Image (cartoon, rainbow, N blue to C red; front, side):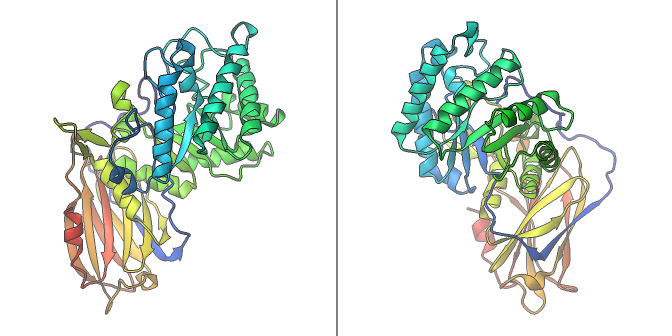
Length: 449
């Protein structure tokens, strides 16, 4: 959630030079653990009172995380404006709804204070006075305790840019130390998240490395290290984070949290699928960014839904991406990506599924080699398998009725393998591949719901 989008413009696809074909492969013999749908999280996206959108929009996508704290309710709002109650009441409602849906809630302390990019005039510790901030923390800690629900404590969002922290870095370090110690004393078992950096880890990034030096030296290392990939590649981000933390002897047993991913012009089925695959490959938990404002921020599942004239929620193309992702169960299969495309693949008894997405504006015929299908269960019969390919359209960001089936046929395997070519002519679209027994004709019924 930011005042304006950052990142390269993926744009609306127009005439492009002929792109070379690319290929990636799935090896079903190399299986990992069960999928946890680590990319199915959002910053905001529930109504202010926590009652909407409907449950199935969350449950159908393997919902994992919600990150919220009442941003943009009143302007100015929050504690600093004497309007804490409205923001807390919304936060509490969204927290309890998140827990009821089986998700984890990440509490945004800065939004409850009122530092949600509104040009506030008072920050914690001004004129050396921390009394007001201490009183704020006392109230917030008591309110969280009264819910009886656990949270992850995100101590301050994007403290390296002025819309959210308009004071010196040294003051932020003092805020971090004070808040960390208060929260740790009050809730020893609840994770602390930070720094939720506006950028990605780099070996030569001054702010990032100064933060790591500070938390190591003050014994206030967060339980979950976090940053924002807007845009970025989670695989490269994690490698850089490993290097910078390991160089300082900072252990990081929990998964990293990229708690805002996807710039505004990356929020479409193609890029969304690519981020899902890269987060899974990186082993990092992800929360999709939200670029909406005011009432739209607190609705629409982080811009994955639209509303018709009656206010009824309708899914966009990217919601169908996450619906397919949420349906991927069993074991994770090994994928070798191409230069511009990556995929997330799973196998379960009776079906195997592959979600394919492209990064950037690439369009190409993408060859997906499906190997070692003899290691699947209940799919191959007499050396044959049913291949169902669907395209998930972007539709200019409008409502999408569902995926479009572009292939549903029985193929004969060669060497326990087959190759499926995806005609990726629109950069914002994504593709799915579902493998079923040859005799399975149920897919059309399921796909048309």
